[in-house]
Image 1 (cartoon, rainbow, N blue to C red):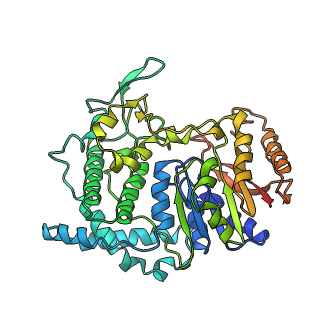
Image 2: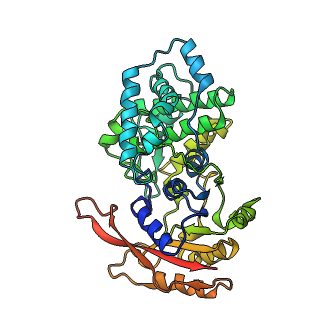
Image 3: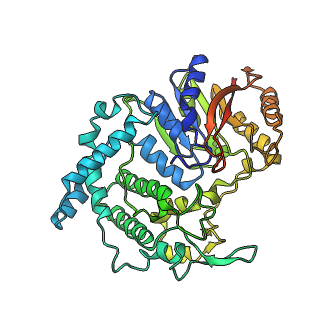
Length: 433
């Protein structure tokens, strides 16, 4: 999910080098704003135990699949059922999909060279490829009202997709093509039925749900987030037929590692049962903090993915969809406003978080531009940096901290269209108890 705001994939190696310079090469890695889980995945591959937390539902799905799961799914029961119904496996497509995932893994910095061969990915991923092939082959004719939900609420053809903005503009939501919306509805209802009837296990279900979420991020008619959509046309990616693809499952060789997945307000995480016991189990524990540091509320910006993530828990999806509000079409019952998105609350929230989570090491990712102190300004101040360092000085059990941030150069891929991509510095702040 490379389009995710604040995605740290570009600086993973820099974070690792920084930790090594601090003599940290193993232990427990606590990712409290896990988002895409890329950071946790990277350190899982390097033998760390992981606590992965994020308040967003889609991130919880990613955590289950990419962090907690440490084996390839078998899909024994459902493959038996679909084969008995006459489904014929296309071996050419299996081969093409296997080659697709190999190429992705070979180019992915999370995984070491030779990972595909080491975990026997080609043969082990076959059951997943069969099930994905079956789901991609499903007809989109004769759909139930539930299966038509995404069509009716999120396409210009839908009977329930009309909106009126706060500025008075009117229109119809334009997230998907008609066929792609119908595919989403049929696939999500199918895997929900499989799961609730015990044809697939919980983890087998989450893996399929993850595949759907990953595809929607690539296929939707949006510019990165789901806070709005292109109102006048469909982007080329949205015109591409929706097709589930195999994901890069993260299998670690560390057979005794702990993997804990949470979906909690980060500042209440320390109250979770066994959380502190897990920290105390490890001599080295790293609290990695990559918080929101501007006004963007992730719950609103990724509402579509959160809805898909919890769809299987909703007894009456149509009734739930009738509660969609705003241009974007979000049911505000599933909304969370982070205190980190407010300038006057940001530092207090950060201090409270660090005070309550008793890790040995604290590492904070930060960025000077477009934060609370620099939003919309042409001249960038260092006020945010100063606030973080001053915060460290106030926390009683901090033994030492770096007064200057460590910088990791990277390209700003969020530079405006048509502009040259800027070289910027990601900042890493460090403290130790």
